Amino acid sequence: MQTSKILFTDLDGTLLDDEKNISQENRQAISRALSQGHRIVVASGRPLVSARAQSEKLGLNTDGCYVISYNGACIYDFGRKQILFSKAVPLDRLREIFDAAYSYGIHAQTYSDTRVLSERDNACIQNYSRTTGVPMEIVPDVPAALSHSPYKVLFIHESDRNLLERFRRDMQKRYLDQFHLFFSDKLYLELVTAGVSKGAAVETLCQLLSVPIANSIAVGDAENDISMIQAAHTGAVMANASDRIKQFGSYITEADNNHSGVAEVIRKFLLS
Image (cartoon, rainbow, N blue to C red; front, side):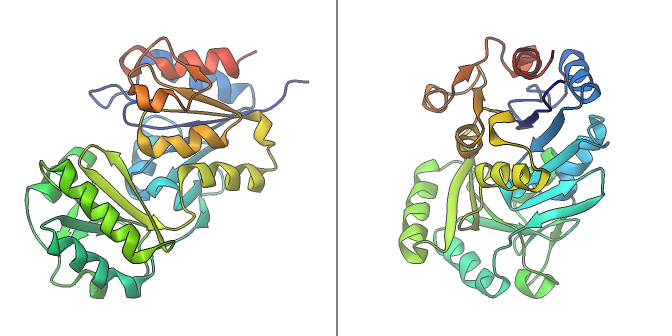
């Protein structure tokens, strides 16, 4: 009897090529894995509305398919059509978080169930909305506009990574172990509640599905994938990742995200 395994894959820079498309080779490998009883999990920093839409576009919206969104703050089951797990940023802390970003001249945004929300209309949120496909809404008071606590806050600066680094250090000192801050892209700094990460979500979903960690494989390319790569039994890093990220992997793909690196991982570790 074949052992059922579970694959956690990042989207941007991993499953998707640089044009944000999925190759036919990746698509076919995923289809074969699902037909053999394996599970596929899209693990993304994107909000749930965007990660779900992307998964549906890729055909990853059937039984055995799951989404980890907001870098681990929310887990969605396509088979049951329901959220299995969520952990949000307290709504009553949002005002001070946004104001801290403004004091540095940094853009801040968060999310409702269907939109990205900000108090300031600028190139940061316009570019984000255009590239992710998530509708944007500018409101006078973000905390007041939300009906529930958000899953994450995203800080963006158009050009200054060093400024974002200084802001992260300040926020870490200010909030100690209350929040986790990390980069999901060169100029994208994310804030989630402490204990939230893609790696923690790997462990949570495996527990919920009664899948041994020994049967888990994760593949990614960026800083926000490190915890996932470390949490899974087999941690694969894409060939297009930086050398810093590659040091965390137990396997480095030969193919990059533009040449179906995820299909390589599926063939090597899932398919019989």
